[in-house]
Length: 266
Image (cartoon, rainbow, N blue to C red):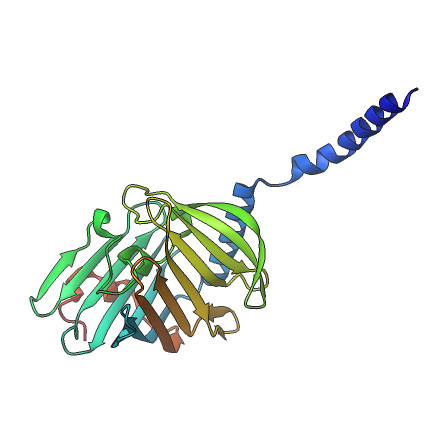
């Protein structure tokens, strides 16, 4: 047997040995879904929570304005989440409330109560990519990111801020109404916390980057960040969120998150 034939036989044998291993490995899409599903599982099950939030808006020149909010959140089974964002300061936005009902398999519902007008305005699905109260967060960013609202693809492993992370792309299922063509998310391998997310606009250009800092664990299970910073690369503006005074199992129920209650919430 000559050298060329011997080499061909060896390569064929190696290929046969390797084939079953390759065939059994998940696709990037399957692996991305598995990572996102585990992150979702670890973040679920808290029941209800409240927290205080300071929102710091910075323009291109570095000038800042601050707002103080209260955030209330309620899980409704495994299919939905309801939340309230209640503005306390400054005076010109005091009493403004955003009510969000997110769903796994249908469109989210959002309503904005404007106290100066004593009017509740529904946020249409086509407007969810708009800025939330002048911040760099869109209405769709404020809504809980339910698992089924995206498809996923594992890209690579990468270390960020000393955290060994999976890097996963996610693509909105509702492409017509989302302001993003895709997002790239860094999720650590130990606790499945998100440390960074890049948002790409509908044309595929990098639009914003969101970073997370100061994670703390509550109830020996649920991780929450102290700071979130959203930078808009196209405008030079940014919005920083500083969280404090988390509390869980506060006794909230679905009636606390109904649209008709918006005019009487304090």
